[in-house]
Length: 278
Image (cartoon, rainbow, N blue to C red; front, side, top):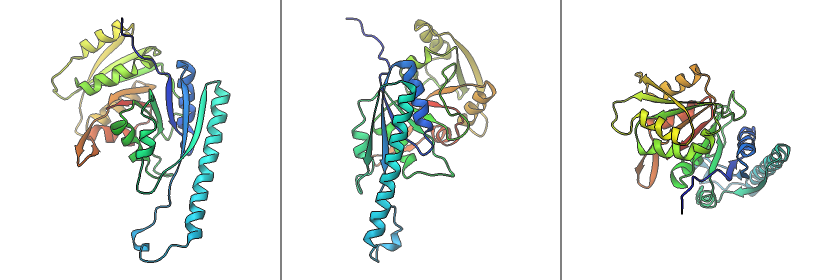
């Protein structure tokens, strides 16, 4: 029996405040025939620690919960409208986070997913636990994740793809997971940041992609003092790239994950969609 490459047929969407992730995910689903599963999250009110000594009026807690639930229901309805207008298969739900549980329930319920689409944190309109959610989906659920920037780009176009390559197995996993979308690209550039890291060469990456009928160019760029993350984003901007593929790196500490420097920089500062895999 011949093993075939899996395609993207199940997409999880975390519906964000301005619906950018929902719109991008719908475009991916149009191109791949995937089913969208939209999730709108509610959050308990975050209370300052100094208020613990004094009772919090029940009506305030209830009002905060009701407001969060109302916002989530609105997000769910907007998602349904986006999916219907796009003509894609979709389902949606509101998921309430439970105090003390964090995001474990959310992460545990979405492991049978081919791709998660999540909006980048907007520093002017922060949503509770957004950064923690991104890290949890990447490192705990171990899902391929498409990060949609909060500004500029409002959609996903696969035409001009950039692959950040450093010779690691994590970067290789990202390429394998991205193959269904890379096959839609009109141009693919493998970018090697000069880090003197041993491993698979860029030429071998291009040969691997060619076996999947994907023609790729090779470019090597020097890593500036500011780091590989900034070098990748600058190159992507100079090339007018539509999206970036890269590995997501983290370090285990007391069962929690701390993002590596390059990964953290990309998640915070990306101005184009980024496909990431740990």
